[in-house]
Length: 308
Image (tube, rainbow, N blue to C red; front, side, top):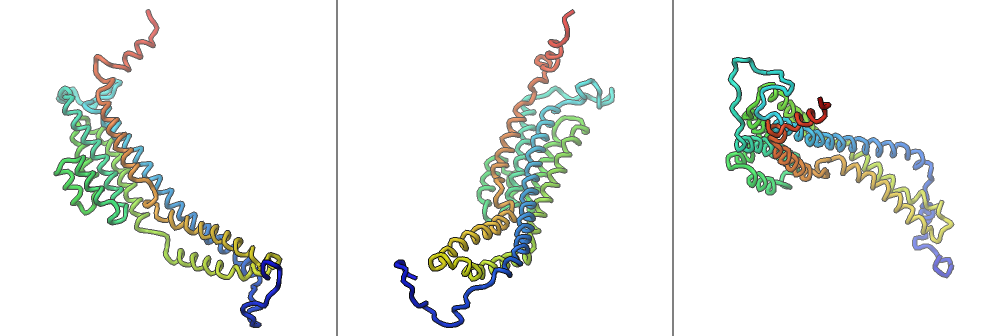
């Protein structure tokens, strides 16, 4: 039928061409199975993305915790309530040198950043981030430190070792250092969990079967919609209907494909920059409220006591 409403003979005037339509029953029967495949694949991919996001969330939280404890406990041998860790005969720590404190805490902050930055590089595609990583590491660390990390086979492990060394150099009791080192064990867990996600993708046969199932289903769907849209001009409504269904279903498949590799879509560089800025800010507070002449806690307590 043309635009004037005049009917013409079909281009292919064969008997088999008149049987172009397919019944909807097979598609109706297979739709629940296709839906389950897409749902399971999407859920599996989203779970991987959610795990990766939580691992980096733990990194953010515990890097702050590590630097907070290192800064607040620097040079302390006892609890603030007067409970001593040391025996009376043990030699007390020397008075705090502000310059030395700034350097040692700065090393803790730098090595914390170096670990998460090395982890980001470790989880990224092979050649995606190498030049930027080397440039950033060399810009912030000393030549010896940067060379040790860049040349390491497993860079995050080397950065974590350097962080352990930086913590060990802090002048404080070993009980406090043990508490700080607990965060490093959590870093090992987040690193190992991320490596598991990176090395164990969704099984390829599952992804291929879902893609083949969906492609075949969509390939034959227009033949099933041919008769239902017979009342439209030359079955023209079948075209946008099929296109809309294809966009929706293939869109779900594409979402699952993107979420399956979470480290390519998570803003890991932003996480690293945020961690570095937070750690630098925390260690800059060293000594605030801890000097005898500026004991904020004591002054607040005295202000709250009733006058006699």
